[in-house]
Image 1 (cartoon, rainbow, N blue to C red):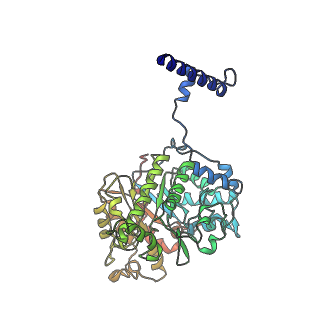
Image 2 (image 1 turned 90 degrees about the vertical axis):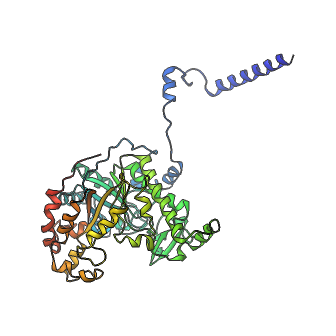
Image 3 (image 1 turned 180 degrees about the vertical axis):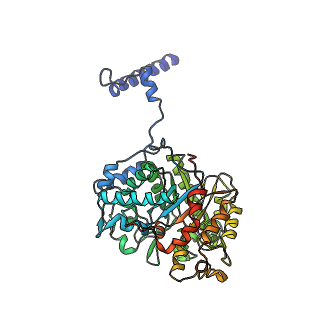
Length: 469
């Protein structure tokens, strides 16, 4: 009897389940085809949707025409793009200061045709000096040079915060670069934000507007810095990097040295004290190291989730001592392990005769801690001190080498000679476009003429880059 009752219950449940399925998936034209062909389609890898990003997109698309025109894409939507990178990177940094007059004129965004012509001119100029890569600033102050669901349009592009662009300038810069075989790396500053006055101008749809007056933003020397002790703050920065790789055919994402800015305990003292309750041995250095390590590894993983061929690199300040005492960047961990970086590019803006941080000495110190063979080593270089020397100013921090750039016009040539001979040398980046060319007229800068002429061969003929990805 019990066995009969059990069979009866199973029969009833099966009948009810089949009836419910018929109502939800009726047969006929409106039904689901469970043929083998349809089954194959259903078994395909499911689409992953970034719901948080989509919600942010919906908040801004009606206001931002350029964002609406670009549309929303799923995670990994751009995974099939094959990044263009070279075995010897020969890059030029294009900062916000270089191109602000290119982005806007007469207090408004330049016309698309004017902007495109100036970009074409800049790239053609760089090709004459052998450059094969540009590192273009797209986020200097927790803002954006492209339509973003996370960050407001930058005043370097539109002259003023609170505005929206008529077109997408970064799309043009990427397209024009690739037409010339130039690799494009998007450059972001992770923690440095805008002034409090500018912060008040941004649209309420951006997440940072929700953080005004909270511990997640800290004002220092008239700028607000993002407090990466908070997970959602780190996630904002990570989302911004993902957004770039997902929506644009960039070949790399690049960060420089705007991390922490000295001990400034007020910045994160409450968060540090709370963390120390769980670990009494925790120092401020270890606390900040961990926060920044989580951010850097998070960005790396997010980029690779979007496109494995896109590189992630960092250009920290050349003074290695400042990494632990000022910026709190745990570069030793980054450079000895996988999962943080594809390349390191210390800013070795020093002459050959600098008393404490000469170019050769700085190169060797950074090279010694880059122990992971999967991480490429490059040099950050600059015409900045050549410009200063032309104007009669020496390097005030160089000690006995203060007048090296004034008395010699081959400092960069000798630096190239040293670096190119090293087995681990994988390229360089030169700061910056404006030091070499006028962004509007395109004319070469006479202030660096002698220094440039002496190192021109190294920049054009001797170092040849071949595509590796």
